[in-house]
Image 1 (cartoon, rainbow, N blue to C red):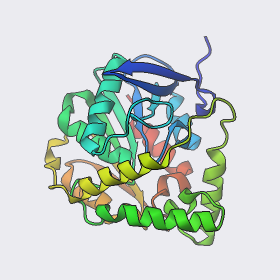
Image 2 (spheres, rainbow, N blue to C red; image 1 turned 60 degrees about the vertical axis):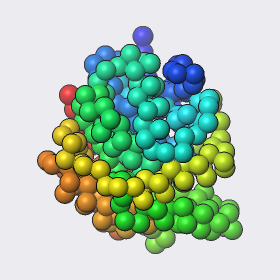
Image 3 (cartoon, rainbow, N blue to C red; image 1 turned 90 degrees about the vertical axis):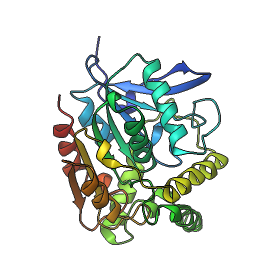
Image 4 (spheres, rainbow, N blue to C red; image 1 turned 135 degrees about the vertical axis):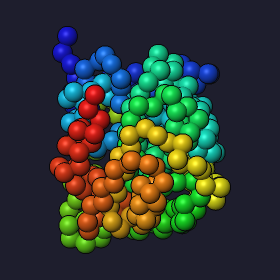
Length: 280
């Protein structure tokens, strides 16, 4: 049996958990501890950069999934990060895993932190990119930035991620176009588009997270890799430094002259770092 190591070729599957049917894709060699990918705001299965996923899937069993109410998963989008973490736990345990590594980006990183606090025994290693802690300064302003950039993208007939994830300098614009093109590499069995009401609910959840009491991040004792660009307009880059200070023994990588999508702009540098960090 051939092992699928290209994300664009991974078939979409489903699993039922607590009344919800979750859509997911898996690739890479099975066996051992899987790396579960927690996706960002307003994102479905088609929003993962293959230049990040594929290198990890060369040696690891990778699983990406749609949160409840997102893409091909059934149910209603939760209005809190903690509820999203409960869903992630239901999904992972429905697949029969009791230990996972987590790769997360943006909202996914908030969900990953909540999951690590609720079920520390579940997570072996944690990758937090483009994200911030509960109560982090500026997180409650993400909705305003998002709506503004959606408008800018609409006026220029662009993908909002080109504005939200990348600097608007020459290098950033090039990286943005390349990133959006990579997301189109999958040409068959595309996921169901993200609906606007789900975006509004997720933004409410993020605002709650930003305005909630800070969590005791000293409880996160897993090896943790934190990464971001140095000019993140969505989740301020200083919050990556804050996570690094508060999660003992964590590693921090900040990419220069890049924004929220710094790991995608510098995928050629970041992917090997992530692969090494996640090695068994």
